[in-house]
Structures are given as C-alpha cells and as structure tokens.
Length: 133
Image (cartoon, rainbow, N blue to C red; front, side, top):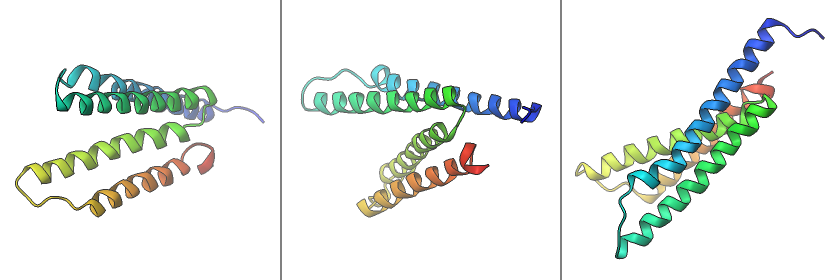
C-alpha cells in the first residue's frame, strides 16, 4: 500500500501533539518545584509531597508523549494531556468556588468531576489515532 501525503500530514500532526504533551509533562514536573515556596514547619511536608507527586505525574505524562511520538499513535499522549488539562480545570473551578465565599464543594462532586475527566479523556483518545481509523 502506498503512503500518501495525507498519511504524512496525519503522522506529522500526531507527532506535534505528542511533542506538546512531552512539554506539558515537563511543565507539570518542574513548575511546582520552582513556584511553591520553600517552607519549614507543618507545611513543609505537604509542599514536599505535592512536589514529589507532581514530579512523578509530570514524568509519566512526558513518557506517554515520548511513547506516542515514537510509535506515531497519539492515543496515550491525548489521554494523558487531556487528563492533566481536565484536572487543572476541575481544581481551578473548585478552588474558585470554595475561596470566593461560596459553599464548600462536597467530596462527591470532586469525585464525580475526576471520574468525568478520566472517562472523557479516555473516550476522546479512543477516537484519535489507530482507535478512530
């Protein structure tokens, strides 16, 4: 079967998506290290824990991007990238609601939001790459 120009263009788009997810993973890993203040006392453990978790998640997202870049299949990169963007959006909206003087967001709303982000990301990633063709 001959490779067409459309196939080359699609592979290029997939590689650009994967490269952007690698950058997103590096940002997720590095930003908490440089933006969270150094602390001592009771908050030091919490800040260190957030930095470690963000570092591990960031490296995992970057690895998903590298995997997608090398294989040419963007499903892993799309899923990881959308989950990170979705988690940030859920955290930002929930944080704004809670800090604006509104009611505290119940735990079940946080859990449902996380479930929607994960399932939505997986559903979208199934529609791209080899899963959607």
